[in-house]
Length: 312
Image 1: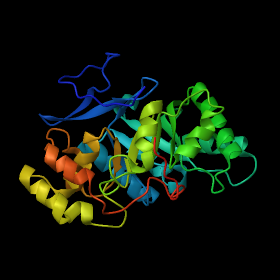
Image 2: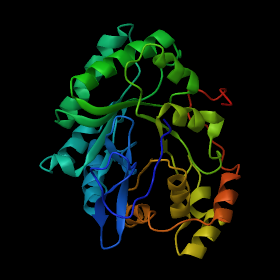
Image 3: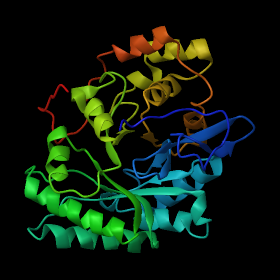
């Protein structure tokens, strides 16, 4: 089954046919769509990331994001800020937000046990009994298949125990996905990778492969990594001007039009509001083609598989 995103004209949470339903109204007109994962769980299309924020900044940013209208928060064990995220979410209706977090690759040879410990730690720091999406943050540095399989076994047990509504991976290459598939009983719902204009609509064939397995690619660094080209650069700024939008909004909209959920981040209320204003307008076919063919800024889906290029 191919991961897909279909816009529907009105909210429809109960339909098993639709891949998307609007779940949160922002003002009078805009809404955050959901994508339906391969196990039926609905995930908001855009999330607020917290990478590089300490606990205090993460707490303040999540509170601001929720006030502005975000309903999907992204954190990780390695960010060392889950306690702050947990404080920001404390007291909120659990159904009002979707939470993604992650566990790192093991540093010992007790792959399963160490992963279990990380999973337990995440829940403890967040002060939650369940997360919506749990990801393996990256493959082990050795790219050892047995390690990945043992980590995924721990993830499956965590999922089957009801502690995550869905499980997935991040920074996984095609070879990594094929490795865990050899023994998996649960297919990853998401693979979160670097994805932005300049990489093309199917970098290294990874989107085609994930689509063929029903795995949603989710974009981190949607505005590039250490560049302003996708924020104020002439190409995106020029297209944005034609729509009354910013260059950054054009860059995010490009991902939406390719059915790519995304994670953005900012501590600015104005920028967060702009990040949510990407659903009620469209790029023209010529603009989309121009952005599809862009080769700058360069990027690779994962720092773990820079040399891996697979055509599927």
